Image 1 (cartoon, rainbow, N blue to C red):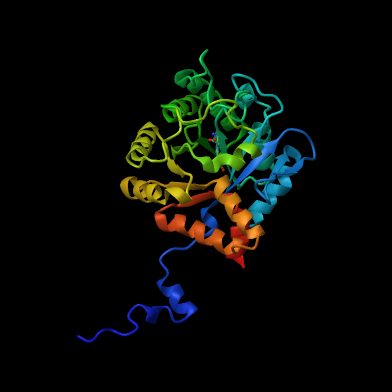
Image 2 (cartoon, rainbow, N blue to C red):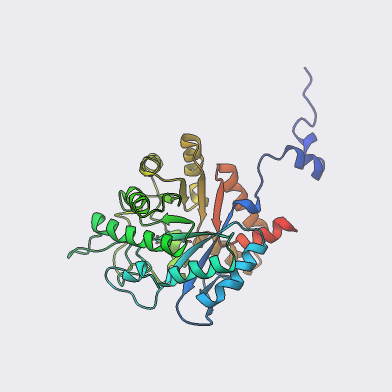
Length: 325
Ligand code: PBG
């Protein structure tokens, strides 16, 4: 047989041919936009390490939600920056906390926009760890679970559509599932930060949410970046405990994990395109070293190709505009 000329290139000759054989696409349906909600009035504070992202006070959220909804983005993920922090993170389950107020404001302005809430203590604790501490400064697992359940419940009571625990304590999905079921919220899904790694890519977020740990690091509860099989065990446990959607975080340096999780469990799988991934693209684009929009789109597409069904990304609005154009 003669060597086939143009064997691979003949389907790449025009944009319409390429469209016909394209295997993956990024849709607006796939996007979840994170929002940082702060205390006070009239606040729209730019986050220096995340150009284009802001800390917003509750009064800003109605317009923000309408803009996000008009772009066709199906969901937001809320993080709270409270006025006061304490050892326990009690602002996290305050009925009138920033996130609880934010949920009500967004659901009032835009009832169809899905409101997912991040459930963790690090934004609310004075020491910045994701749980409560013992005298030696170790994060206590089971004592933390009680508080996470209170926080999740307060979000559901305020009207949250979905709960996303990001603390990485053992057993938190089961604990939160039971708490929600017992209080009449069995219809509320849990999106578990299932394989969440102790990553240096969270740097800009910790500035955005002012939640860097004041001592030590998160390595005793978040995962070792070297481990793939352990990630599968984490996901398996969260599914057993009742997770409806499983998340891999970060995304770009963990595409292999996304692929394995999707293949192994065939569950709705979410990739978190984290703050450091966003900041790197913004920084390089600002210097004219890369085409920021194109690199952002290619990165998000790679997460879809790896197996993600949905992506939490600070670039959600830009991506939606690009897709619509
Ligand atoms: C809270 C939380 C973090 C992120 C999401 N939820 C910070 C952390 O675990 O240190 C990071 C998100 C990002 O970097 O965009 N635990």
